[in-house]
Amino acid sequence: MIPPFITFGDRVARTVMRTLGGLPMGIQRRLAGGPIRIDGQTLHPTAQLGIRLINLVGGETFETKPLAHGRREISVEAWVFGDRRPVGSEMDLTVPGPHGPVPARLYKPEAPAGNLPLLVYYHGGGWVLGGLDACDSLVRFLVAEAGICVLSVDYRLAPEHRFPKGLDDSVAAFDHAVAHAAAWGCDPNLVGVAGESAGGNLAAVVSQVTAERARRDGTMPVPAYQVLLMPVTDLSRESRSYELFRDGFFLTASQMRWYKNLYLSDPSEALDPRVSPLLAPDLHGLPPAYVGVAAFDPLRDEGEDYARRLEQAGVPVTLRRFPGATHALINAHAVGAPARAMSLEVCGALGVLIATARARNTAAPGNALPKAPPPKAPPPENAPPEGAAR
Image (cartoon, rainbow, N blue to C red; front, side, top):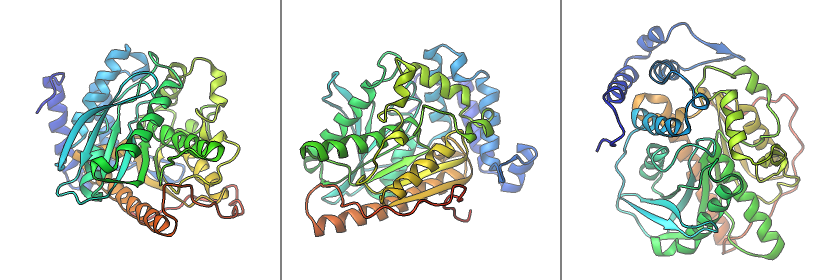
């Protein structure tokens, strides 16, 4: 079904991009133009083609348009680049939150067995844009390939609802997921959190907030694992990757500043670990994590910094830099191999995290924080991130 806001031009863009994405890589390279190399990395031709199409169709960037236009545009991009992978079922529902009901969508795989893992997913969009449809393609992929249930959360957006309302919604959605997991055919001890970009920020902060809550007063639950994709981890500063990839790679440095100004009521809030989880003084005892960053992304360095801090705190963590990728490329399942390959890797990481959580629950039943091992020695300052072959 085609959404009512889709125009004829959007349909043309979808057809063109899917056709281009299906071409042999050699032809894609020629159409994309000369290779773009920065910081020892080469931009993937499919990503390069996608950026050219977005710039051709969209023209101005989000921060230069009325907010309503930007919100429509991110929904259009999700439709143009995404794919509606079949799943067993999906159900729209609402979650009670401190500021009122929170819309959400529960996805289940085909032929679900009992006691499935449940992933609470927070969409990207700078806390300002996006919604359930913006991450629908990736969520469907995870449900179908990993065989898990996913609760996708439509948390409140700024500037109408500034920090911490979206975060409050996110914590409430996680708590609700654990409380209702059994009724949904899921294992309440295998509920994790995930998200990309601003959603990755929320997943990281939900992990910190619930872990601190458990340490303080014994209140459960805590996520069994966390998957952070291209996460925002520090709004208090701009890392080197902000300068390297400030323009021309989908997410820009100026967009991040715009998001920050709309999300926060005061710039000083950027120093709050609930905004910048990298600034939390203690990361010991957080859930095991997978952190995936894009090679061509202003957020690359802060994501890698957060993974290193988790490792130094003794948290089991896998850090992956996706070669040739831009921010949000992981959502473009319909236009070529890169997004599917990235998403398959995330599914594999989820499998490892879930298996580890099962083993931990068998040894010590109950949704509880894993005991933190002694901190490891910090890696060299310029140590490269974990990588893998294309």
